[in-house]
Length: 272
Image (cartoon, rainbow, N blue to C red; front, side):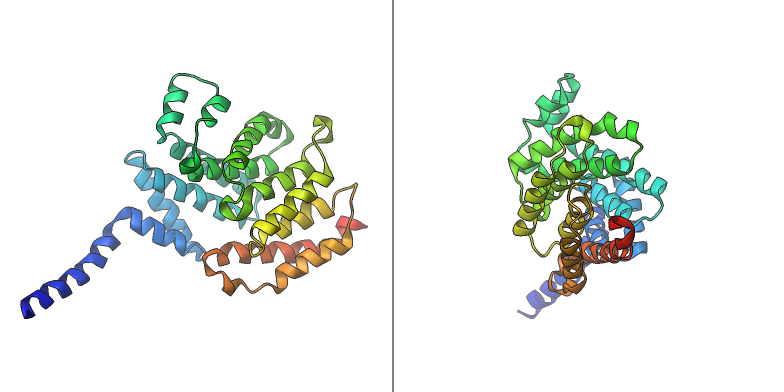
């Protein structure tokens, strides 16, 4: 009996040590600590090292998310663009581990047809490719925006079809911004649809604060809207929110709070 207890104790001691040595487990743990800039950079370095050894879908997805998160907090526009571009490449690496996508690309099928073959099980790779590409397009020069516009829309249309509530209603955030910010020359700009999408996003995940920030930024300041009262209401709700209530997204919510403060500081410039 005593020998069994000793063996069990030894196993319990060894197992965490083995887990700590597992690169994928270490990568996931580093991403969990992404609010710490050093941990985030270490996560990115490890993710790149793992990917250099061969395709790993879970590593590629975490890497795409890490680049996205780092870019969101990066004030320099050029560095931000570079990070989002790296996030796109990591997302594409994740997509290439999906047989239907890899085979379709090898056969030189149109990507829009390949993407239609993706399922809910492929959402992590699809979503984080789309998310990084959309943010890249937002900050890119006009010519580069146009170059990726159709691909951005195609990826997000598939996200909407598969699971609009994925990542706290992320597709609603995208389309809320899309219908507000897409150039009017496209004929797709529609502030009413923008508001509808943002409201659905808040309904999907009211505790994910970025939705309210983008609602205020993209819709409330729109030239055809200029809703200063709603702008203040949304951003003050973000600032008053308790991020500790949802620790799994506290890092994202803290970034949202910083954005809210910055937008409120620009209120006069945005509305006067």
